[in-house]
Image 1 (tube, rainbow, N blue to C red):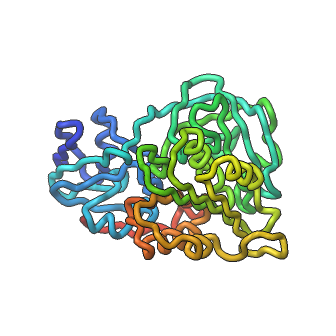
Image 2: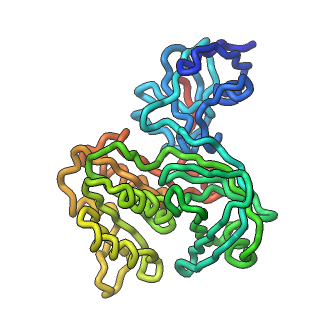
Amino acid sequence: MSFRVRIVQFDRVIEVPACATILAAAQVAGVDYPFGCESGNCGACKSRLVRGAVTLGNYSEFALSDDERARGLFLACRAVPRTDCEVAWLEQDDAIVHPRRRLECRVCGLLDATHDIRRVRLEIVSGGPFRFSAGQFASVTFDGCPPRDYSMANVPGDPTLEFHVRLTASGATSLYVARRLGVGDIVRVDGPFGTAFLRENHRGPIIAIAGGSGMAPIGSIVEHALQSALPQPIHFYFGARTEQDLYRHDHFSAQARRHPNLHFTPVLSEAGDAGYRRGQVHEAVAADLDDLDGCKAYLAGPPVMVEAASAMLERRGVRPGDIHADAFYSAAEMAGAGRKTGADM
């Protein structure tokens, strides 16, 4: 048994076998359907159900909100048709326009950013060119390790790629990067993926909130906005536990002195008397900014921070469609925490 699914942009009907997802069937049919993680976590394959009915498998609440699902949006990588359907992937600012590349890279630089975050710089050996939008991520495979998703910390167009890898107690990949990775080692990179990227045509204020290694994509977004001479106010908040968890703060403080439209605020949740803001980063944003009309927000970091900041922004009137969030799940969390149970649509 199979169902017929018409994909609006491709103007053709594909056959989706029983129990198969729309994305999987589209790939078999040769449809260039936008996608990313293929596991319900990134939102790159977010689509609109024009007609028909589907059943959704489990997915991350950050990839598809309850409000979006109520408005008829779904994730093609988790959607199994229950009837014949018509669907359309999201376009305009939310379209993924960069070709996916499989790169072979060589480690050309290693730097300890903090006591538990390492900056890994890679030169592309083959498979390029690699184009992406600031804020996107890639699947990175170190020798003998399973692939892991890391955001590009460099700005688009840089000749080298940079990733920030945070050491976790149970993370085999992060332990490898911390203890064994060396300059000259070969690394495989697959991407780009993700929809929490800078919307360069937007001219309203930007709110950028990073927690921990969320500095990678958010720093890339802010840096690219400055390089592109975007004229609107940019409010950049960086949340960390203590002063030893801060990095790149001197750089962005200097950038704020050079660019009057950039306002940079480090916030420490466990600060002593170091002269930094104290408290939760989303609370600092709420205390500083009253009028959020017309803002776009970019968030990256621990899921609890992303969730709290998203809820605060929505309470202040920012539309869910203007909140572009990338919650950093560990491998264990990806298996279950922060995921919505599938349901029929």
